[in-house]
Image (tube, rainbow, N blue to C red; front, side, top):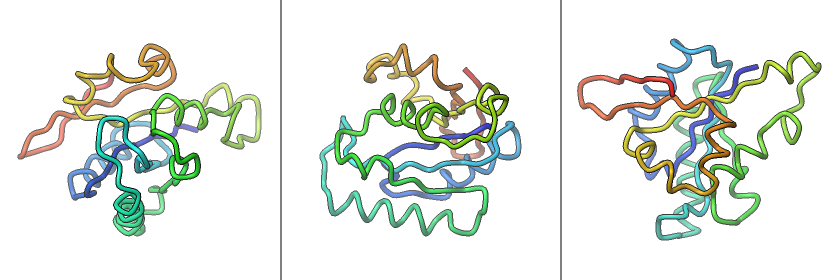
Length: 151
């Protein structure tokens, strides 16, 4: 199973987010895209009411695609939303119920990220370990198209 995580504040979620997720499904070996709205982003002002609105907007935005899923995992902990902690929780040994040892061994997590955020990745909480846990799909921000590269 290959999971692709798309985590962010999604304030608000918009068409470019959806197009990036669709691009990944079409061009990478991802079985599904798991959208994870940040509950308490570490580098932004926290507003709990806004956080719940963002979660609901993401649910509405992705409901028509059966390969898109929304997780409220960061809302369950109510702590600062560090990507490392979230990804660690999603690994097969911790959260995902895979039926066989072979599936666990073949499990891969892709992570959608913008080039601007990836440029700051070394400032993230436990960045070196995070880099070992996921395969980044980095998108450049251009008004005309969506392009990506794997890191």
